[in-house]
Figure 1 (cartoon, rainbow, N blue to C red):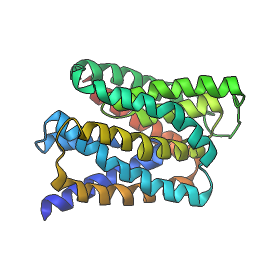
Figure 2 (tube, rainbow, N blue to C red; figure 1 turned 60 degrees about the vertical axis):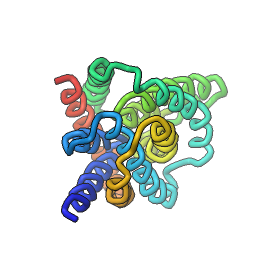
Figure 3 (cartoon, rainbow, N blue to C red; figure 1 turned 90 degrees about the vertical axis):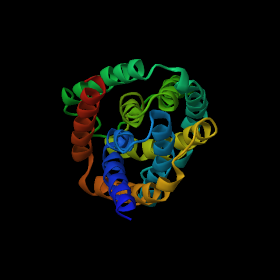
Length: 248
């Protein structure tokens, strides 16, 4: 009983922060599952399944608020999902240490870049919505989708920043689309692909799912209430902390 309560609280906190910052649930949840005794591949598959519920909770809140454009989400899924499937099929052959170091460097770079750009993501200024702009933006999401499927965590933060930089989203709208893309759809496909290749700790999944869906909904509600400035600060904190942990 205490174990299930601990898993629920872990998922609630990790996914609540992720829903507010636009990614990063794996910063707490995945290392914690490994610390609790699961091997890497088992922890990764269990984590991916649990974070699908983050997307469910956050998607409900953002679609109610009208911050996630369904047509835009569907367009981006066409590019991202093939990358996720490809990445999930190669993860078990990638040296874990090398993958974590590379992700650490990239994640640190995101946080540093955002920190030195005070106005980044504070205004909604749509751009690159032509056919050519959408295609190039979609190719960027294909690459991030591959990283999502093949690396452990943090790629939701990449999607959030890509939507801000390339498509001109503010952080609220970028976070909304990210949580649908990554939390619900990309992690769902990645979880299915991994579950077909490696075991899952199914006895832990219900508590993690419940914590994830409640955390996702509450985190999205707090993000909508507090606006772009808070989301940007949390984004920077999570990227810097995650990058350092992955490196050292």
